[in-house]
Length: 73
Ligand SMILES: [Zn+2]
Image (tube, rainbow, N blue to C red; front, side):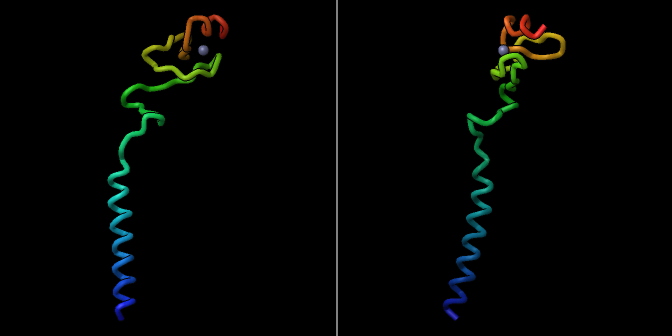
């Protein structure tokens, strides 16, 4: 009987911990794409990732530098 109670308690504890962790693990990571702050785009010429604000828009595509725009055209 006591073993059963312990088992039920353990299951409840695990479920509680999982639920609690899921709620807490919502902290943003710096490495992952944080589109809300600064959206990263990939330069089609050299493959470097740059922030949209720093990128150069040319013919509907974003490039990391004017040099890459010239290479692409
Ligand atoms: Zn580039």
